[in-house]
Image 1 (tube, rainbow, N blue to C red):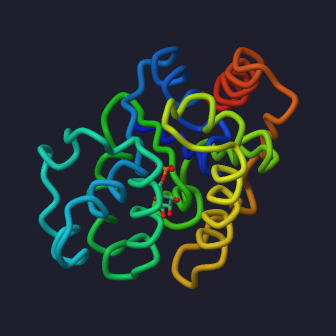
Image 2 (cartoon, helix red, strand yellow; image 1 turned 180 degrees about the vertical axis):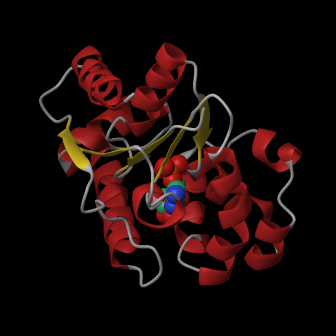
Length: 195
Ligand code: C5P
């Protein structure tokens, strides 16, 4: 059985939490595609070569979840050759037997335009910055995190190649006023309707 769930949206909107929960619920494989760009950004050297030679060791290295790795990811993610090098792996993952959930920025628009379910998970920049700041545990101020979130949104939404964008047929889930449990429940309902 092939069944693809595409979950896109800005940083810290709840994509990762929702993706992990629904993959567990329905027994789907899960790919956090942001990790690919984070690993490329942290590998150093020429990012295009880094993307072409990305290994499972690169994806397992420490520090990929840090704010700095997110920044580095967002920079290399604007390079069309980097994005192109990562397409085949993501599409193959999406076709996994038993179903797959992919979360990122361009899954519903570019990677899997035929996904059975497309969700665009979003929340206000202030709410997302607050979540990131609370979970970061790093020595930084809320204002700095908010500025970073806004800068990243602008870069991700403004780039020419595969900008962050809700697919026309995506369902938007605004988690600003939702608890984690409510957001997960809403996503499960959308998916169950299409199964
Ligand atoms: O989702 P996460 O914060 O881990 O993503 C880090 C960065 O990687 C994003 O800000 C974005 O620039 C890039 N990215 C992307 N396309 C994806 C996933 C992530 O451009 N599918």
